Length: 188
Image 1: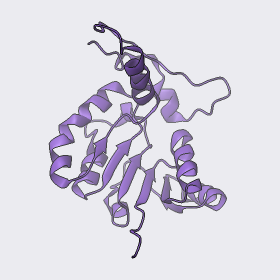
Image 2: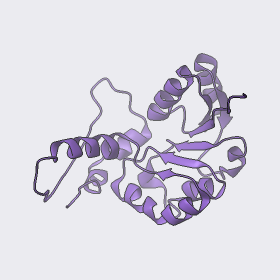
Image 3: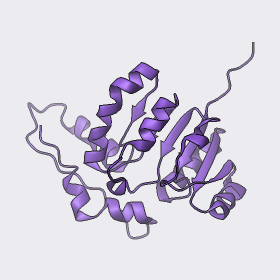
Image 4: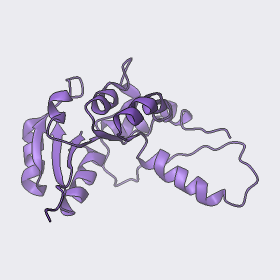
């Protein structure tokens, strides 16, 4: 019996701080990964060192031509606070193209707003996940574990900051500004 082909993954912002770490881990595990960067030479340098397929792409461009050979798109291009008026353009285009969509947003408002695409993603039979990143994902897991024996939660504030030696790209710096963190407060 023929084995099904593993899905091909497109990482938007695949040479950035978090996108490159994700791409490296997926490539080490044998996944077929395309890595985008605004600079083709930067994407080429990354794929020469780690594998994968280099792609030049800037988030201001239409991503749909990149979707045709992929089944999963991970948006690590950020900063999600700067996605402007049409914040969910990439997610919407991925869903409409029938791709599974994940993003590494650490912006609370952006992450909460993805629910507006839930009905469409269900109708297309795909998953759309936002906030698959440090603050939303890790802090939510910590809250869930810590809250098991509590009767209720009145207020939660969470922040994860890069260490002194951690790499910092533009998205990391924007995501860790004071204004971005207020959006991550949760009142239950």
